[in-house]
Image (cartoon, rainbow, N blue to C red; front, side, top):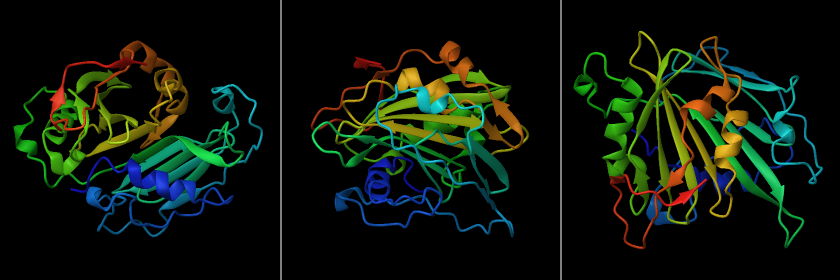
Length: 269
């Protein structure tokens, strides 16, 4: 399986994006070659017409509140089919969007030091291959999303090295087994990794949401960015996440931090 923690690469890719929000993003080498991280790829053939992409309306204004971009009932949607699973997500106003082995949304904000747009929140929704996991270890009645993530966080080949990871937490969302863990990267980037198990299937849908180290808005914005997520026709209510997901206490990454999951919290979002 490809490395599930790939967002360092997306920072490079999306920062180089031009105005066309629905143009597929090319794969480039990461900043740190030692990470050896690339966008997840799939060898499986997609359906003949896998994409249903609608461009996002760009809004260049920079004085809106952080959640204003989400308050749009008529927002355009980004959609694709991956491994036979239909995925769809609303595009917040002013964000860039692309389809590249899943759905990619990137928030561009204006830096205080320079008017050049910089990448803020990054969202990636995809269906990962599970061939490197031992699904026979998932017990009957066990939360399958949690079981999958529990194997993932125990393997540095999946999540990367020199990162701090929290233990997965399970819950249920719209009748689906769900689980999440928190990851602090080498540059202190904070990532929320959510898995949703599909009923009557071994497949899971993964949502990676990442923010820079100095951004403490992830917990507040999480219900907004995932509101209206659709998987095979099922719509997920983002407001319910506030009830099911506790405030995010990201683990502290030390210079020589182990990759294994920890229950020790750090900064509370």
